Length: 536
Image 1 (tube, rainbow, N blue to C red):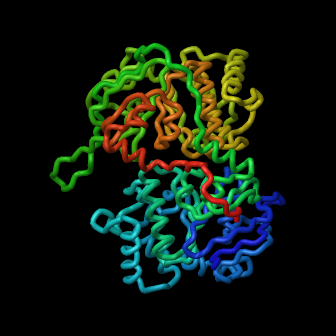
Image 2 (cartoon, rainbow, N blue to C red):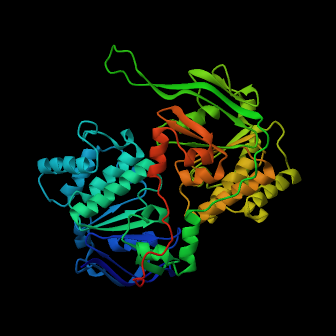
Image 3 (cartoon, rainbow, N blue to C red):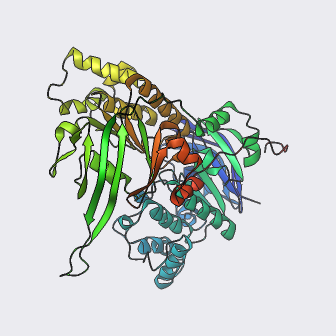
């Protein structure tokens, strides 16, 4: 029996067609994955089900949830259905949670809004669902605030809110995109368990086929507002018909060819690095404790080498990165770039810092939207004693934009005029423009579609050939690290537990933690045909 039935759904916003003749179904106890690039209409389909469409939108077609025509119900009736009949898990849990309310209050609020039970029982139910999603009472009391939790733990709270009233349908919109591989595996297992135990339907929205290849019962592929292919997961992946589906699959497992690194010449040396943070006092007269985020880390990065750093959230990757950039002092050890210390005493060495650049995870958030691209990518010029001016400045801008596959005329546009992949290219151009000795990529492709990610990885390979790049690539995506690095380091609880040639570490891991990371990473299935059933 179909729980959700969407028939010939059309949607326009400001007279622009967003969805065209979208039809799909989700049954009880069934997981249906909707996949495609950004702008394909995945999230708008989910918002149409929730009836949370933007103003000035017009739609036609039918959306039935357990026999109720959602397009015909009033807003008051729809409010009653949201949370009780259909729940939604959003991509970014921190923005979905209220930072000034405890997790207990927020889960209970979902129940109290619907007047499903008295406040005391709502608190008990909040505790029950938090336990169900793996947040035990002893470690995660109801009095915790969202900022006291990790990304994966916050996502569990959002899931608890969505299932508090046992809805028949759960919609998960990119719920694991920003999570590390082990947390991602835990969240996916949790969602599968909920579907099985509660017999609910799950509409899973994702851009990565590898994530849902062993999870979804059926896959729906969307492109530019239309469904181009759909079918049972195993059959669709083994018998892909549409070129777009084949492109998505190929991009999910995309490999690049890096040039051979030159002879080892040390550039960055990290020796016995220690970084501590002071903890709050447990009582008025007690001595403050310390948390060791980086513990005795040592490694060498050679010129022209590409080094990867992987590990779960909270393992110390970002703390180590800030120390390398000279943004945070160490409590022990030393960091040298090209023989010069990153810190002179407890002050950063600015002559060294100007030789390093960083590319962040969110390119839009790292740019000032009020400035044009020419102003944005020349920010590193402020680090130089004699920055180029006039014609020399224009030539540098044009050369940097051309190097990353953009046109020199893009210098006169604003950042909102570009797609996510183009913004990341601009971020790379900003890092390249002063030809730094070292570039740090901090989760630089984690939030990108698989096809855009493949383009950025190809760009990195091309730049390595053209500019002899040296970089430290920090990511939780093991498949990406495997293809764009020569060596890899695995970090756990502030320590490097394993390092070596990338392919050797991935094919023959030695440390149990490395083995667990590789085992948790999503894998694309073998495309050997196993079924002759027709595409549904």
